[in-house]
Image (tube, rainbow, N blue to C red; front, side, top):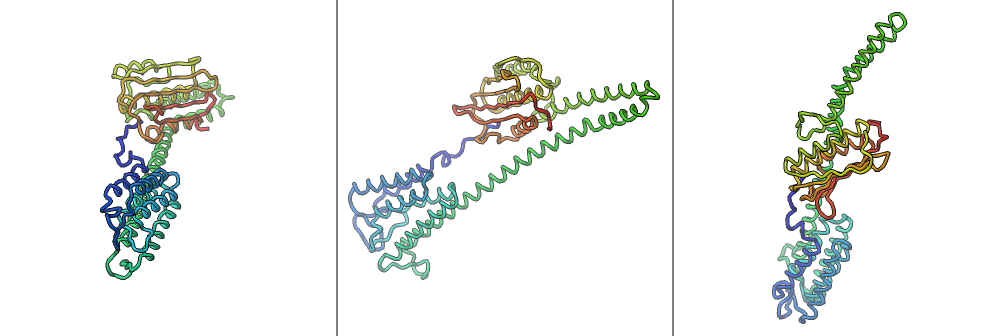
Length: 396
């Protein structure tokens, strides 16, 4: 669980609000943006009438409200409102670029956040309307193509293109960042597996080699020298016990947070009360709840359940900024054990399982054919849950 800073203001404000604010900015300065007191050639025009302006504003607000759900319809309504407000449908009036401020905002947000197809349709619609408007204005000079001055309508088309390109750039940057994040998470899981493989080799390869040699020797002399066969079998037993002990130590060491090794290595849920007492002494009270029969568990399940709780509680202490958390161990079902760790802290990211520590826990649970989830709670705080089937076999 990792704490993340709050997003900047422009990301916390919904897109609908930005589009509505853009319209309000334009409407707040009618003499500059939406027309003056008289209608004149090559400039914005005011149709005159507060009721008409309020009606256009209502249409624009409906368009703003639809910017995420129906982006093409949203842009259509905003264009209609802007052209109606400025009398842009008339042949003797050029639409001011500033009067389309809400259209530019919607086009940018749609291109940055919505599917590519919606973005292209919206941009084509806006550009087609503006090109048609340029062609209908009597005596208008399309300065983009003639090299002469650029008229107001020409500037509106240029600004629409700039808004679309800016939104496209934001989309590409976001997609690139998401691809890098996904790749980093994949590499973290791969590294975790490689580390497990290296530790497994270092722990058991030598012992298994000894077991194989001793078993072969015992097979060859079991009839002629039974005493030597018994000696070999004893060595096999000793090597097997040593390998199991080393494997347990390796599993614990693999999951120690930030490379810290405790003086006494916990072996399972029997150490949960000691973990709660230690954490409480550190300043975060741990409430432990147990449901069902708390009998013995298979070693790999017992160890994994404890490690999930231990790392989650450690993250609460380090990152959540709370004074307490709750740990639940549910054994009410005979064929599984479930653990849940919840806190009421700041939360630890928006994407469940986004941290590399959580990726390691998820990998551990996956190896045991269980289910794992981690993410913010709907009413605040953070929750980690894991379900481990008791019939699972590691690596199967």
